[in-house]
Image (tube, rainbow, N blue to C red; front, side, top):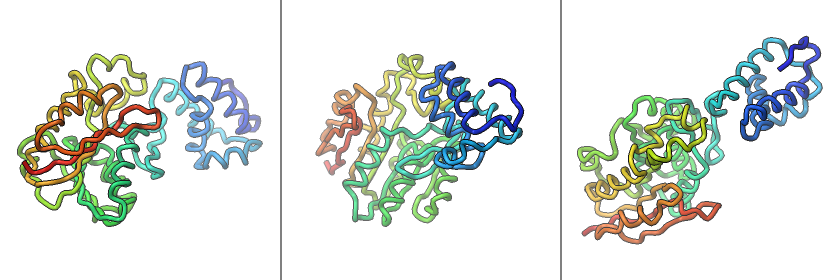
Length: 294
């Protein structure tokens, strides 16, 4: 960005040059990124920016903005830079300790809400990460309660911020545990109505094909199973049968092209009513089923 005096830099000028800069760096949606970063620096909403286009930007704010633009040009995710994202219309804290919640995971969450609306389910969220699923379910199912587990204490620290942010500490309990380990699964006790999980399902072979924002900044262990992409589904297919609760529903997110293989893994005698739910692009995204007594 060229050097000018602070009085010459109007917000409109800043945004125009910032957008062009990010576009030259091959950042997707450069204008949107430029606006959100500037709104973050100024403490305004994006709508406020449009109302203040003719206003000059202070020199210290311009310097701070340039630093954030440089980070975004280096492909650091926008959500990490501003420390926040939106999931299910709820603001959530995020940083490099956790996976950035995706629209695909909203399909998983909405499926649970649709099925359990008006009821008060007890939920187990395996691999909670930022807590996005547990927080959203507790918010939109007011009578529900959730146990949200993760093997990573750093991830739980972020989840705790989000639970507290939305005033859900009495209904969302966070615990450090590995949801694939027999000792934990056998320790689960009633009541339990719903198990949800968005496991790492990117294969090691596919990892290098991911965008730099993902590959270079997001926690690999939250995305990649270091195998064929089905490792955690195999563990879960076996593990759900170990939970000493006779019946409960489960909802699992799946990657593109995995539906047939995942459905086959869960086609056991202790599972009934398997159903695949598609996302808005008609991609099979969620496997839903019921664990039943054998």
